[in-house]
Every structure is written in structure tokens, then in C-alpha cells.
Amino acid sequence: MDKTAINKLLVPIVIGGAQAGLTLSLEKLSVVPEGSGLGRVQQFFITLLSPGMFGAMLLGNNVHAWSLWVAAIINGLFYFGVAWGVFLLGSRLMGRA
Picture 1: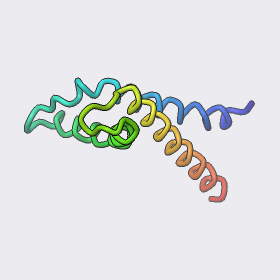
Picture 2: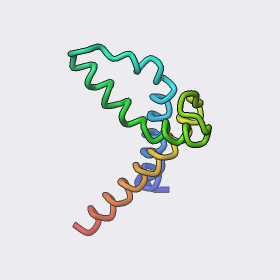
Picture 3: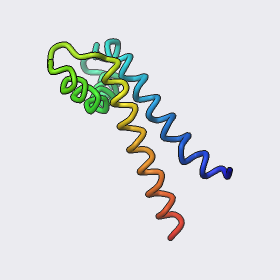
Picture 4: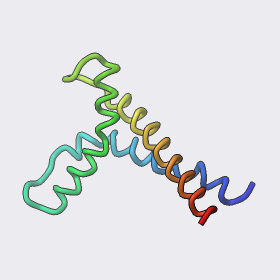
């Protein structure tokens, strides 16, 4: 198996796993310090976790009480798909260039 084939799955798995891990740590990320650069970075990462949060709300039929595990699974799968698509698109564009 060549290195590109391994990277084609390894990179999306790492990115999806990282997003799932960030979703599980959402309770700690939600305390955002005001007026600092770190607060803006935290707000950016919380925004990236929105697909899983909305999906968990949709599956749980409750906006106020949704499962963090469901959101983590949705975010992991969503960002795995996005990273895989970007990797495939980039490899095709680099092959043609």
C-alpha cells in the first residue's frame, strides 16, 4: 500500500477524531474570557462544532437538552467527510497541475 493511500484515510480520521474530541470538551470551551485573543480562538472552535450540536438537537428533539456524545459522533463523521473530500480534491488538482 502506497503512502498516498494511507494518508487518504489517516488525515481525515485524525481531523474527524480531533473535532469529536473538541466536541466532548465543549463544556470547558464554553467559558470564554472577554476581550482576549484566546477568547476569539475559543469562539472560532465552538463555531466549528455547530454541525454536531445542531444534529444532536435534531436527533434528540430537544434544543435545551442534547447529548454531547451524539454531537461528537456527528462532528467526527462530518469533518471526516469534509477532510476526505478536500484531500481527494487536492490530490486530483495536484495531479492535473
